[in-house]
Length: 168
Length: 287
Image (cartoon, rainbow over all chains, first blue to last red):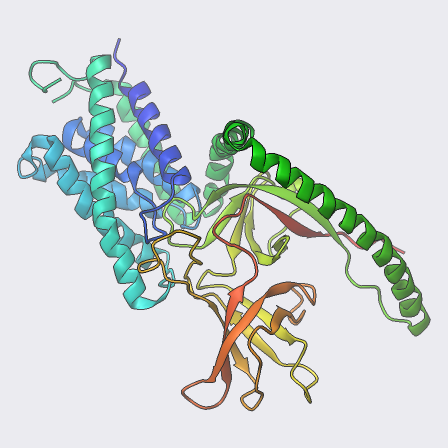
């Protein structure tokens, strides 16, 4: 029996809980974008249709957790999943390093998208916001690493990915 | 990579895309999504409160006993204060009646647990509390902690409410100095959130700088003393008058030379809110 959907639901629930409940990076109020990390993993490692579903749900979870307009992040993650698809080879076929590298850049892009879409005031001025955005780079890397490790492990255990060909 | 997805994935995708498109045109969908997420947020808050706190209490039993004694003393003192204030309130009611003053708006205090802080991104200084429209909360209701004002309710669903904190860059509150400087009846201004966050003890101060709030549009020629209390002025009708907001640090004339601007440290610790009190308006009784 295929367990794609249960694994995705577990991953999204864990990522949403971690993103909402854990504090942000030291020195910055911005949260670690675990949900984005999960979408990056799905975009680079699973079929496109699953990546798009994960993107929409992760986006809705992000938007519903507060402060953002309806469909703001969902739209970004949907476009992201589509954009990452052609870059799979460049990103080492969705390996650990590829997911971490992509999540690092995507975390920054997502924050900029949210700032512009929601027309949020820059917290503490331009320089403070620039500092916060810079701290999003390591935050994205952490999110990507955690998402890859957990999702890949769950996918391997549940048999969603083939053991020999996909490095389980 | 992966096995071929079955047909139900395409159905799920179609449904999800329809939700995204609907979300572009209807903000009300977000309220529904918040209600779906609410049980999980509430469960996490419950675990934190009922399991996390007792577990940490096991390791701090000596502290708990001392804290218990402090709280017992505080309750005794507050009981005395309440008894004294009841007499003052009765006198106030009589005088208002004698002068034909309308009664002040009455509020009901609703205790709300904090479910999450900063939303899912952290861009906004806001918290989500675990009570909403069903508990009588409305948009604009003031949110307090024991030390003073924390913010106001920005949006409500049946079970949750999002609170915009004082420190959010979009927060604007009509305030005044208490007491006003000598020779002036009142010095009023608009308190603006700076988006900063107060640093807690032991945090990395180099990166985590304290950002006070800004009280703008004060009278230019008034010299205000540091440590003066800042309270809500009641203008605009959103907040009742006299709620403590913070303490003035310093003031300077703005670059244009028209007004004075002051830095204000919030009285409430806005980064460590566990539960808050919402002043919910009580509907006026019909004559």
